[in-house]
Image 1: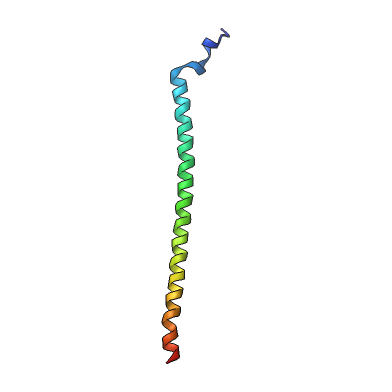
Image 2: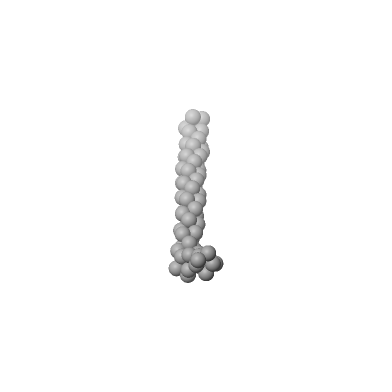
Length: 67
């Protein structure tokens, strides 16, 4: 009964289940990393838009103040 053959780890279905579990864990980690990267990209776009807007407003104000 204590033989290596009686271990459940040797079952093909069990090893397939463990492989799937590990793949799902890896997929969750990758999804979280993608979400964090996407969030950072959105913040960078917002900041770039604000900087361009500030730059554009600064360019537009100079000619009107010199006249």
